Structure formats: structure tokens, C-alpha cells
Image (cartoon, rainbow, N blue to C red):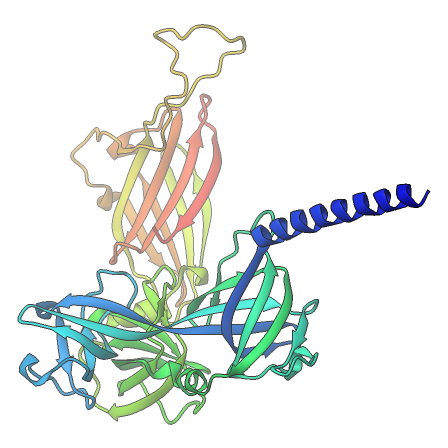
Length: 439
């Protein structure tokens, strides 16, 4: 019996060792070890971390402007490897930097044609630490709230079977998620990263003109390019006396986020805003003001009458600066081939097109007279915000037959468009009316 017991024990030991080895191999594949530095804790649950890095970029000297730390333009003969300068990037072909912006940079290489620089950058991460085992640098277990800015940590997590496709932005930077965190161990305090992180919103400087002042933000236009429009949130200093027309310097993290339909983007986290001048700038034109203060969300379009020969609409515009619809109108028909679907599957014939539809294809209707559609449009201003627009196109295009049509009302700007799409049935009845604004 003793011999048999020893054999059984030996077998169990061998099985245990094999199981441990298999588990270890499995965990080796699944375990992820990451190192980063704590930069914040939210709701005693979400831990934010960062890795400080630099982005090395090479530019042709003809495509950038070299400036000293006072933002004064300097010649390349006054620049040597190791110098810290501001690099003015007018056009960013990497789609990474903000155009017409000065970036604090370290010179890595420079010759007659090119300059290579290192620009400060960050990579952010976040994870849920509710179920994690967190220990300090002495190995003692601590709470999530005990993690502080500058703690270098080692994160052990398990890679999930499938990673959700989630994009997150933190302070204007893309933030990566770490899933299934099991252990967190503090290694030491990173004083260098702690200091640099506190200055992360001073990496870049942009010159701009204030177009408008909101409760918590500014509407600005780039000082040198009126095609670049931004909304800029105040720094911690708040409103320091901002007024439209002032020239300002915006210190920010160098990131620009894509904005809405009017071409207004958002600058990333702002560290400081300085007022440098008070002269109203000629760049602030009526068209620029309209992009900030005019939005199709404030426009309502109703159809009073729609037949195969005419249309009457009422446009209510509650914008502070209103759209200006002219008598530029168009009437088009959708001539795209629609796919046929027979009741019983058969071989295609010359009269049947299967799966050929690739999208709408609009074509202006053929005129039956020399009359201009503008001449049969009537625009009536009912009050400050309300306009009635009517058009009888019978003498220009005749009555519409069956098909799908759209009627365009066009403004002074190419984006100021209202499109009314509708279908005429075989019996001449109107159906499927759809109104679109702003394209």
C-alpha cells in the first residue's frame, strides 16, 4: 500500500508540475507588463498615466521659420545642434501638428537644406483600477487614492480575447486603454516627468485675433491666415479682459482637434493666453464672423406648397448673423440607374439591370425656354427672421414627370445651401419630401 501511495503521489506531483508549466505558458502569452507614470486619478477608479517622449521631425528649411525663445526670427547661421528654439510650422504635411504655430524644439541636426528637431510629446493611457492589487514601493498594499502625480508604476494586465474599438481623447491627446489590470506596483517618483507634465500646455505658441468672447471660451482667427479659425477655452486664469479685436498669444499643448461644418477647429489644452495688442484686424471680415455666429441648427425650413410646377417655402433664421439666400436656384433630377429585383430569380435581360446602382447622379433639367430660373423666383421678407421664397418653374422646365428631384436654394457662400428632395409618382402626386441644410 505504501508503495502504491508513493506512486500516486508521484503521479499527482507530475500532473501538478505539468499544469503549472501549462498555466505559466498560458499566462506568459496573456500577461501584459506596462510601465508609465501616474498623472491623475478620477472618481477613485480610473487611473491616468503618461509616458514622456519626443517626436523627431525633419523639415526643409524653406518650409519652416527658425525663431529664438523670444519668438524673434533668426538665421540658420545662428543655430547649432543642441539649441532650443521655436520652430514655426506654416504647413504641416504630417497631419500631426497645428499649422501656423511655433513649437518649442531641440535641434538635432541642421545643414544648408534641412533641419531635424525633437518636439516634446506625450503618450497617455488609462485603466480601471477598482479590482487591481496596488502596492507602494515598499510592497505594502495601498488604495487607489494613494497614487499621486509622478509615481512611476508597473502595470500587469491580461489581454482580453477581443479589444473594444474605443477611441478616447484626453487633454487633446489620443489616450490608449489598458484592460483587465490585476496588479500595480509603484517603483519610484519621477520628478522630471512631474515637472514637465505641469508644463505640457506650454509646448506651442499661436498668434491669433479675438473674433468673439463666450462665457468660457474665445472665438479666434489665425493672425496670418483667415482660413484658420478656432474655438479656444480659457486657461485657469479665466477671462483676463478679453475683447473682440485684441491680438493674443495662445500657449497650448500643440494639438488641434477637428471641429464642425463651418471649419472651426478646437485648440488643445491651453496653459496661458496673453493679450499683446488692441488694434482691430482687417482679417476679421463679415464672412469670418458668419462662420462663428451662423449655424444651420438655428434655421428652420417649412414647405407651404409643392406641386409638379411650383414650390413655396418659409425660412426662419434665428442666427445673430443670418444666411443670405439669393435668387440662385437650381432644379435637378436623379438619373442614377436603380437596381431591379424580379419577383422570381431569372437570368438578366437587356431591360433589367441588377446591382448596377452606385449612388445618386443629379442632372439639371433641360430648359424648354430661354428664361432664367432666377426670373421666376420671388423672395419676400416677412419679418426680421422670416423669409418666404416661391418659385414657379413651369415656363422654364414645364411640369415635372415621374421621378426623383431636388430643388436647391443657394446663398452667397458655397456652403449656404438648402436642398429639398422629393419624388413625383406616376399619378403626379408628391411624396418622400426631405429637407437638407448646409451642403
